[in-house]
Length: 354
Image (tube, rainbow, N blue to C red; front, side, top):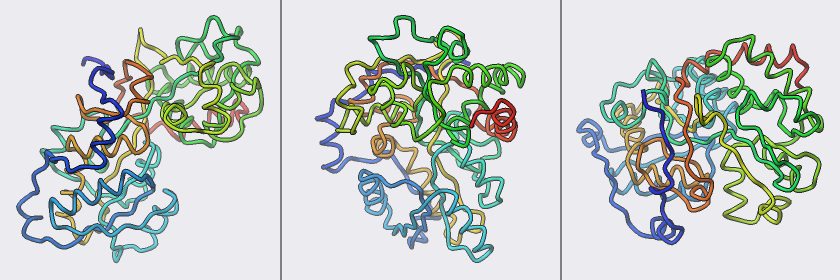
């Protein structure tokens, strides 16, 4: 299998993105006959909260005549709510971020398998559940950022981050963070449990401060001088390039970045995605909505909302993401990675990663 290259030449200029979000755009999406006959509604439980989603939803309603009813909230709260609602849950579609939460929803029994030629053709195999209970619709990569003035030889691989030369230099979030859990789970899948434990211990030994805050706080640590290297998802820095993020944007010029493992597996990526709820009362409409999310235009809206990468090849994205450049993405099966999450947390506990 050829590793995916995220190609900056396919990205759109900001002026084109503005046009996309303010004018009608044809959607390469065909509504299934069963859904055409039923019309009606689809009940969406979502932990996404982005301005561009309004256009995402309105286009679907205009194209299909299906009304979207939304319940928004924290991912874990929504999962718990659907569990509590049981067989009488009105949920049709669950949208959330991070592979760990998609797998948590599956493990809770609140999703069901979906057979769809459209989703199978459009969504790469490594970005969908092996049993078709969830599908990824946008990507972010977990990479290194560094202070260009102080770091002349930044780490080039995830393994490098544990090297002695970076002792006292690293800012990274806590072990309770799902992004770090999924990163370590991917290292387990690629290299095995013992290598993953050695890596986690090495990172703990190289911390500049105790883990604290979110990804934006790690980037702020670079600007403030608390650390020289930070680990963050790409969209946090892209957001600081596209808008004014306090404590980051003003110092963005001094920050460099590295997509790790470009000569081997490729950089770790994670997903925003969703699936059809287990007791969906409007199943045909729910499947139609997921298929719509895989269309070119919906992929643009979905990814642009959080400065992420579309999962469908060749779909354009934002100028801020374009500035990050090309990279090779790890094509490890994220469904397999998700199964390593309990082991990842065990390793974090064993090495004292707070």
